[in-house]
Image 1 (cartoon, helix red, strand yellow):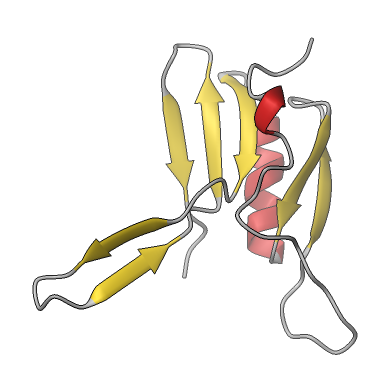
Image 2 (cartoon, helix red, strand yellow; image 1 turned 60 degrees about the vertical axis):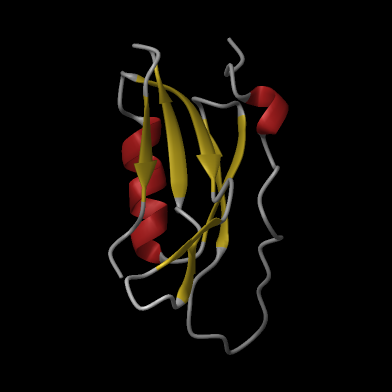
Length: 100
């Protein structure tokens, strides 16, 4: 069964990049939920991708699907890309950010 998010698979805000000697751990995790790869940028994100993939309520999983922009109380611009969006069978969803 294909994920209802399959049309968005691989549509991340930017590509995953890796090079020799870098400090973080990016890669691709093959998800049985989506039937394709889900990106991660650290061991913690990899753990969360696996956890979400094995959660029965999750029927779709996207890696860093969008950027959020807002201003704080002082007017400073802030941006953030959630690590994952998990689509639930109950028609809801979870935004997931690994600990920072």
